[in-house]
Amino acid sequence: MDAIKSDTENYKNLLKHYIETRDEQSLYGAEQISKSFIKRKIPPEEIINLHIQALRELYPDLSEELQISMNFLLESMIAYGLTHQEFQTLREKQLELKSEIGVAAGMQRTLLATTKPVIEGLDIGVVSVPAHQMNGDYHHFIKGKDGSLGVAVADVVGKGVPAALCMSMIKYSMDILPEEFMQPKAILENLNRVVERNVDPSMFITMFYAQYLPEENILRYSSAGHEPGFFYHKDRDCFEEIETKGLVLGVSADAVYNRYERRIEKGDMVILLTDGVTECRQGHRFIETEEVLDVIRSYSRLSAQEMVGHVYKYFERMQHFELRDDFTLIILRRNV
Amino acid sequence: MNLEINVKEASNQSNVILSGEIDAYTAPQLKETLLPLTKTEGQIVEVNLEHVNYMDSTGLGVFISALKSTKENGSQLKLVDLQTRVFRLFKITGLIDIMDIKAAIRGGSE
Amino acid sequence: MSLQSRVNIQKEWDIVGARQVGRDIAKKTGFGTVDQARIATAISELARNIYLYASSGQIYFEVIDNINQKGICMIAVDKGPGIDDISQAMEDGFTTSGGLGAGLPGVKRLMDVFDIKSEKGKGTEIKAIKWLR
Image (cartoon, rainbow over the protein chains, first blue to last red):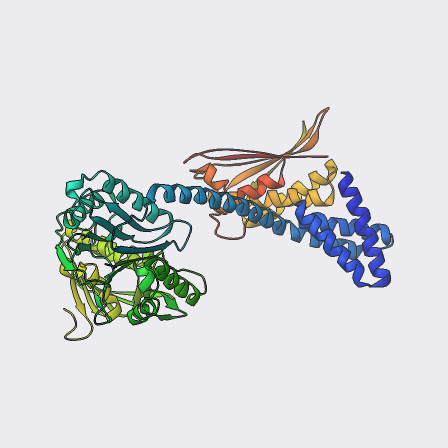
């Protein structure tokens, strides 16, 4: 009550001063008082009432019509006040949700964490950035007992929380697969059955799984409808799309996947990605695949990790720092 | 960008003509129109994508659920006149092998 | 307790009538202009809900005057379809009237006491009190 009384007094004095001098200082005062009202959640009708009180005290002979018109304004403000309060509550709720998602995103990072293994003779670079807080892309490295390297790159339809939940399922399913099943073809066929049983009919996942055998410098791979990656041939300085066939995971329980194999020469690269890379947009224009490859080539003197970092920065900047889709890029390069 | 959906019904065939972009925002709308059409046994649902210049994975998801529904209900789904970019999406994901799809350009990848 | 009034709500016009009755009682009870406006707005929302969803019902007004407190109590009663999910109806940002209505959360904000009982297929009873300070 005291606060309101001092508000009345303050407001009245400011108003009086302004009517007398019409100076900017009183208006600045009005701005300050208005901010303090907002801070203390005073609704607009209360402010109008303050104005009415002040007017009455300053001009006791105020015409009745004017007084009634002020009451009319007060009545008109009630709904505004309510809506404002509603927005306020919704804003608080939004912050709450945001922090909840933040916690979930942290959990997801821990859950899906994968460390880039050290493989003799192989330079590995990886970048994976979600468009929103949670990542619908997934990548995973597994170093086998036989010294081989397993690399998975996956993308789930949609983004955000539902996509992230789905990804956790993939991660669990991969974790429980015994090592002898860690062949690309077997992994995809296993995961396909899990996904097919457990997701909504409109949900699906694309995945590329590769296994690199450092002893023989051979890459074995299979793809479940995943955005094709590229081989880079050092001797000819050219890129070649990794051609594969295979249905996305989750559509048909009995899908079978082809097995492919390729020898990797010294200085050659394997580029794996998700459509967040190839579907970058500049304004309304989609970038061409050539452009992605040109950018990769332009950084090819750097280490694999520096390369992916620079490529990401390049496209992040081109899209004005607003990713439309989760972005994952992995580069493997045979050094020796 | 919006998606315009027009449906023309014949005796046992529904022609769905789409125009615009199919993405996370417009996909639910498409799903609402397309799925009920696939529930009738013997119905042929032909979707024309000539004027769809962009589709993302959410759009693919709608066609996948429609395909699953045709299998459950004994109806048929056909996609015709796909633009190159959209066709590529069906090709990469392996869906061209299990769906009835025809690209717009003759001699396309099919 | 004293002074009970009842207003029937059937036509949109009755909303205005209910506001008038409520405002007169509020004024007599000693509420200031701001609270009168709030009470009238709350009545509007209650009456509108009856008019839109139940097609007919009543609003009862009562002046509460005991040793500790003085105030106005309003009870809106209808035999309409009832509210299926009250928690949802009380949630901000959820308005079935599909417009700028303050809805039930608005009434709750405008008044000091708010209580709602509803059964699907039987009707709804909403009680709201504003205390005089």
